[in-house]
Each structure stands twice: as structure tokens, then as C-alpha cells.
Length: 640
Image (cartoon, rainbow, N blue to C red; front, side, top):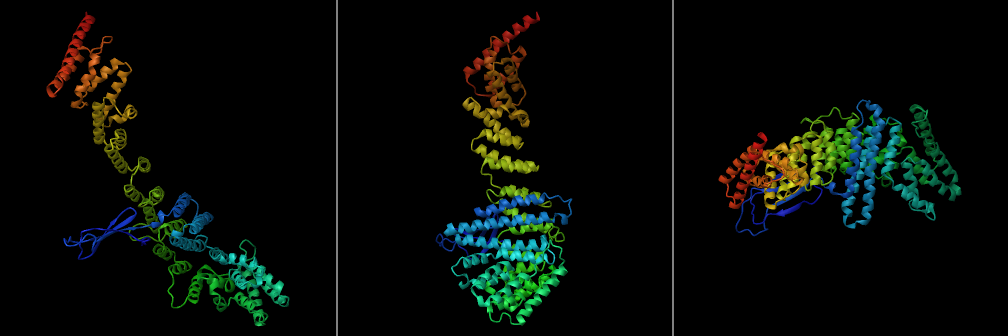
């Protein structure tokens, strides 16, 4: 149900011939790769001629529009707020909240439309694209507004027509600009659009504005003043249902019928026969369909004709009767040979109270999942979609929300919004989130930390390990050992921590000092992740103690590193070299004869297993011998 919104990019594969065309598809996080398969190379074929092509087809191009991104961001906050409405309160009592949320969604759509209109005036190169987006948003708001009236607010008879009039007025506001132009002209009554403005106001049920414009004509035509006063009286007497008043619907209906009969008497008496304009208005007030259809250009659409027709022929229409009037109005207004547009079919389905058809048609006709996902979610909260489940296990609301969120994930900044949408899909949301997070490109450590935080908050252990491993390998390949070690510790990857620890030790042997001291000094319990990491942390601790002149503690720690079998064998000579100044200490006797014997055993192993400089071996042998002699003397003296 996806539309190709842009001309797909094409990549030619040179030097390849093709006898039969077969297409292959590869799904990405936000696009589809379409490529030709089953081709054979041809030696005689020149590069670029008759080549198969690779097309990248984007699933939802609108997420790349800066203005429409505001729509996605703002609606995300409304969506999250809707999910937080408590389930304890009955749906009927939450109706005002749902209507308010629906209006919030529509206000966001309208704000984006206004911004797009502004951009159209400045960005000439993108006018066609922007106009397309404006028309889509206009249709989106039109459909949403009607669904709000019919389903969310569920206006009863009487109130229903008032809401439909507001709906038409909101989406056909050009009459106000036309009226302003007429009234500000030098001679309003002689303006070409004067009577169009009067009729337009009346067709929208704005009788007070129509009366105001008619006074201009009455003031300049003294001979016809009686006719204009009679029309003004009819318009003034036109009953309008007041939902907050004490009048019942039956009383209003009776009052309206009396007024309707009065209009009919005026027409039958030919009261307005001398003025064709006023006579046409009288016919409209009587609900004459032919008179209305003579002004199709003022009505503009069949649904405007429907509302005007109801206003003057059946103002107490009930929701259950709408489908009959809607279908007949569309048939009368549209040419019998013309095929209804997708928007017409969607609105007709709404008037027929076929919610699922509305959602289905919108999914096909509109160019992204934003509309159907948010509208279906709101309708689901209103308990209007509870009976509709899909054959593959998910309900309609969750399916559409998942599709919308999956499209957001492909965007470099909107992907974070998708998380909340997945979180509020109880059946498959977590599975989708796990799969989609694995596809989020980790261009920077900052972004990786954001993804990691999301995974940790939701206890996604495997995803946490995967992200940390990816970032650790990337840091290691860039020779950023501290970052690599930090990521491997976070991943609890003992093998990789061992590898990086060895790189630290190799770096130390080469440079004679450690890098990333803050990290190594603050390993804490993390050093227990692997033996090599433990050795790295303890060896760094030995250097710190030695630097603080704590020679006894440093010497004992160094000896324990040699005897604990956690030091790499290649590092033994380095440890013995570190022990050399401790063996030669004059002020403090650090190693007993037992310790010295242990050091001697390590020395022998090094002497037998490695090719070491003779001078260094001699220094170690002499230091061990002196320390042993000193230890024997001192310990013998103490015993004596």
C-alpha cells in the first residue's frame, strides 16, 4: 500500500547484457532496492548499453521534508498524551478529552499547511512539490474533521448539521476574502461578485453576513426596498438549533416548518418575481436542489452541496440518514460520466459510517502512514474499532502504528520518536523495536549512547551487547583503546576485553606509559570481567603505589601479580624489571628470602624461555643474590 513519491534514482551496471528481465527486491529500513537478475555478461556489449538497472524506491519521502517533520514531532507529543489517559474512566466520560485531542491533531495539520503556503511564496523551485504537500494536508484535515464530527464527537440530530456547517465553512473560506473585496470596493452593489457573495453566505448558512451585504443593495434601490426588507425578515426568522438552549428538537422542527411554509408562500405569491436574484435566494431557502445546482461553482464540491441541501430541507437529519443524502448528493452534483476521486470515495464511506473502508481507502490514497496511524489510534481509544482484528494476529490499530513507526526509524533524527510508538504496541511492538534498533546506523558515539539507553531501559540484553561490540570494534580499529575498553566492559564481553587489555600492555611496552589513565584507574569491579583486564588494573595500581612511595605495598602487589598466573608470559620480564629497584631498596626491606626465592623461580623461567639481553639478566641475578643474602641475615638476626 505504499506509493512511490519520487522519481527513483537509477544506477547502471556497466558491461552487463540482459536477455530476460527478472526483478529482485531487497528491503531496507526506509527504502526498497529493486534490481534486475538473471542476466549474463556479453563481451561484445559496450559499457552502459543495455545495462540492467538498480532502483532505490523510498517508502515515505515526506519524512525528509523539514516542514512536515514538525507535523511528526508535534503529533508525537499528542500521541503519547493520548496513551496516558487512564483506562479506568468509561469511554463516554472521556469523550471531551478525545474531541480535544482530535482538535489538537487538526491544529498541527493546519499549522503545517500555513507554513507550506508561506514557503510556496519564497521557494519557487519547489512550488510543485510544496503544492502537492498542501493538497494532501488539506485532504487529510478535511477527512479528519469529518471523522471527528461523525465518530469521535458523534453529534446527534440537530447538533449534527451545526457541526457539518462548521466543517464546510472551515474548508471553504474563500468567501470571506471575496466579501472583503466586494465591501471595500467603491461601489459594492455594482461589483461583479456581489450576488455571488450573498448566495455563498446563504449556502453556508451564514445568514447574518448575507443580511449585512444585502443592506448595501437596499440602501441604493429605494424602489425595491420593500422586497429587500421582506427577504431580510425571512433570513432573520430562519430558525437555528441551539444545543445549549431549552428548546427541544421537536419544537425546533415545528418552528422550522412554519418558517419554511412562509418562504414557500412568498415564492408562490411571486413576491420576488421582479428581482431574479432575490427569487433565486428564496428558492435556495426552500431547499430547491435545481436552484442550488445552478451555482455549482459557488458550492465547489458535492459535500458542500450536501450540507446546504440538508440545511434548507432537513436540518434535523439523524446520523443514520446521512448515507442516503450523501450518495444522492454526490450523484446529483457529479457528472454521471465522471469517476469519483479517491477523496470523494473516502468522504462517502465516512458518511456511510464505514470506518474500516475510510481507513483502507486512506491507506491507499494518502502518501504516508501518519494519518491512518494516528486517526486509527484515536478511534481505537474511543472503542470504535474493537471488533476489527487482522487475520495475521495483530489488530488494525497496532498494525498501522507499527507501519508508521517503522518508516520513522529510517530518518536520522525522527527515529527516536518511533520508540514511543513501538512501546505502545503491546503485541508486536517490542519485537519490532528490537529489529529496528539493530538497523539504526550508529554514526557517532552520542547516537550509539542514545540507542543503548533505549535498549537498557527496556532490558534488551542482546541488543545492548550487539551495540557495545560494534562500537568497541570501531574504536579499536581507530586505535582508541580507552573507548574500546569502555564499550567492551559495557557489553560484558570478556574475550574482547582481554584483547584490548593486551593492546594496552603492548602499548605500554612500546611507549613506557599508559594511555587513558582515568579509565584504568576507575575500573572498579569491572576489572574482574577477565583475567587480563584484572592484571591491567592491578598493574596500573602497582605503578600508582610506587609513584606514591608506598614501596612495601607496591612490592607485595607486584609479587602477587607474578604468582597469580594472570600475567601474560611475555610480560614476566617487564615485571621482573619493575621489581629491580625494589630489590635494591636500602631503606626498606621488602622481599623476604621466601619472596626472593619465588622471584628467582620466575627469573629462571624467563631465562630459559626468552631471548633477553645478557646485561639485564646479570643485573637481575645480582639484585636477587644481594636481596637473598640481606634477607637471610636480617631474618636470622631477628630469630636469634
